[in-house]
Length: 466
Image (cartoon, rainbow, N blue to C red; front, side, top):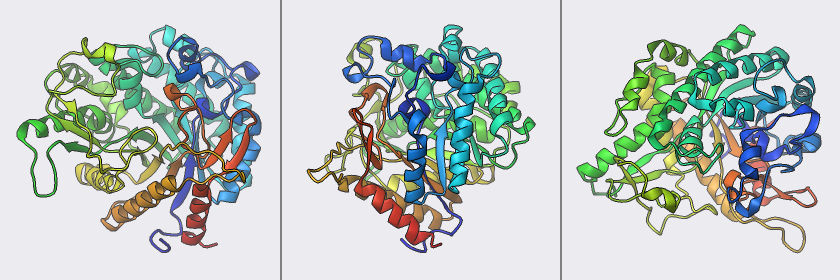
């Protein structure tokens, strides 16, 4: 793929704090909603927790050395809010923030640009106890925290991401409860989307006030929505198309329109609370503060049908209590490859997603970065100690080609970050899903670069000659 990307295109890798750091009791770190969630019975596969994870807190220099050998130009990581503010308010915990100070300096010493994400789902437990993202006050607390981090690191961090995937926090954390904090509010979870986005807008203002300029964005999870019945040469029926439009509003436009357009999309049937959020014009003006870039996390498309089928992914105990939804979930054809998570692998979906965002938002869309893209597979070392993961190589090869196709179509996308550098704690799935370019043997913490690591290193070296 040499020559398909400009020399200043950013190749990177992504991680998040709770998934790799461990050291949950070190240096004054407070308790997060994920510590609480993991301690509850039957929440996490095999009763696993992020208590140790990849021990990145103590091994970050080794991990930065792996990145330097890989040749990446940037590293996207998240700061653990309870490590900086143990109770989610008040003065900074200096010892906790010192860790990120050391990490940023280590990255810069290896010419790796830090991309710092302020929030990747680890709300301090006292903030959740006070209502979490169901309350407007959490947005103000988040902005205070953002200012504290910017005051210390603003002069050395190249890119700032306010929130990671507020859609997933809304739907999985507060809607159906399969992620922390484990609430099952169903459609009553929609105000948490608004409060997260308001916190994003307030954090942008706090970062600007701290002198951060030209390098602020958000990372939204986006999925191309495919109506059931849509095949080459066949159009979907009107019911399937209407259902797909409704899901597009919930998953995509609910989180992009306010940020990029300053308004909420029209509410589909059953989502009347969206109209209530739209009436909060003062908050919307804050949410729509201009950004310097827009992060896109892409893993898979979603196939939607008329609401005569419920989501197979939902816990069975919820299916009887769900309110009427204007959509159902339809499986992809068996010919579509699947990842270890069972997710469909559809590289052209990335092209469709990026071109679709560009068409929908036009000049309101800032430059794009693919801030997460990757796949889990059950990788294990061979007898000689090597770790071959040809399925991941195929997945990444296809998605990088899809990225090049989007650029050829005129999309202004300036960087690509693989999820993830390391195998890690994969939320409710525990350690059973491996997304890393680097295999982690959790009992020994031995790191072993996989064949996908070597593939990515070769790609970077070939496409960005020194």
